[in-house]
Amino acid sequence: MDNCSRIQLNTMKDLTYRQREILSFIEHHEWRNGFWPSIREIQEKFNFKSTNAVMGHLRALEKKDAIERITGQARTFRIHHHDTPEVSEMPKNASEVVDIPIIGDIAAGYPDRVEPSGEIGRLQVDIASAGFSKRNRSFALQVRGDSMVDAEIYDGDMVVVEPRDPQDGNIVAALIDGETTLKRFIQKSGEPPYLKAENKFYPELYPINDLTVQGVAKAVVRSI
Amino acid sequence: MDNCSRIQLNTMKDLTYRQREILSFIEHHEWRNGFWPSIREIQEKFNFKSTNAVMGHLRALEKKDAIERITGQARTFRIHHHDTPEVSEMPKNASEVVDIPIIGDIAAGYPDRVEPSGEIGRLQVDIASAGFSKRNRSFALQVRGDSMVDAEIYDGDMVVVEPRDPQDGNIVAALIDGETTLKRFIQKSGEPPYLKAENKFYPELYPINDLTVQGVAKAVVRSI
DNA sequence: TGTATACGTGAACAATTGTCCATTGTCAAG
DNA sequence: CTTGACAATGGACAATTGTTCACGTATACA
Image (cartoon, rainbow over all chains, first blue to last red; front, side):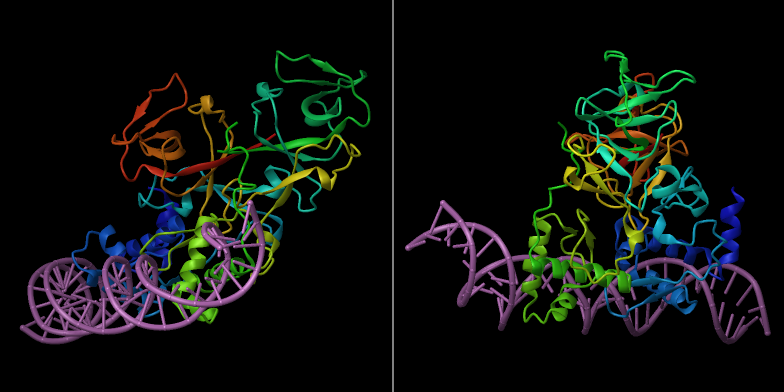
């Protein structure tokens, strides 16, 4: 189907297809559940009638140096990833980002497993997309009320705000009547700037001075 | 109103020093070895004469919602990261969290500056509120289309999905017709579960099998 | 004073789980 | 044809491991 996974499959190692299936499941189980499967869980997954079928594969995988185990101990695996990591465009300084794969299509491949090839990008939360700053100059506001519903920002949402000067059209955290609220910042050339609520039931215009705007909203985070 | 958006700021009761030690060791063991410790391994570490000492602590940690276990199964832990553990043997590698203050009211202070006193909590992007996992078990989906607009999820949003079994009412990433979509998972007691689109112009019901649900949506992140 | 929580010992039990025995079959290579 | 790698069955055993009961201490609290 997609050549990415095919290439990876063949470059990997001299594992058989079945062994690769087993290995995939083990990895996937840990990824999904946070702990490794027991041999009988693997057995069930593949409808083996005997645990020894699993044992055979595990021995093979260990012999081929794909995995490592601690004999006698339950659910103790270690996966050896000596397939070549591709050149990464990601910043080497891992401390700067929280790195989350963006998966666009996980339909292909082993149905119960997310193929690496399904990844269409990475979400680097602190920098690229959301403006999260390590310097902690950014902050999050929890939205109360519905003054921004027309901008799809709702009660309870967290809005990440970066303190800086706004530009026309930015959603800003603004200090109005002693309260911090979210408004849209409007500044047409030659005219004085003003703020605007994104809810048609609210007054449109708000006065503004140089202490009003506290920062620019960079992202919305909503827990579900 | 809904407790979900209040996040888990105060849901975890305070751990005792001893409980924190235990928790730290469990985390550290997994970090170092790649799998969770057994109860007797914890016992040895702390020189307990009885496994029941460990059991007591584990029960307490579970009661306080710090960990999760699967009864009867070996080495199956799940750590709930509600806050940053202060006592930790683990390296304070900053790459693990992006730590953002949640500011409830900054009206009182100097408006161009974030007052520490205005902080009502902290948003730890990778773990607490959004289900971001440093182990990368979570993943993000970019929403295409409008099948969830009635749940305030829009085209282009990033949805953070944690792979686990859904409960009634959860928004889930579901594999339908070879495509991953967002649906609401409905399971009334005694009845077979089904999926439901949150858009009145879409068909309501979708069939479901054990490969359908890929995970539960934990958060929405939208760049502005 | 009672009661609750935290902390721990000691021993026994039962479930989970890894391991190993013998055996069957296929298939490609020598 | 034989050999070896691969795949799987079936059953049994033993180690690992989680669980529970009974019992003890200390501390804080109303």
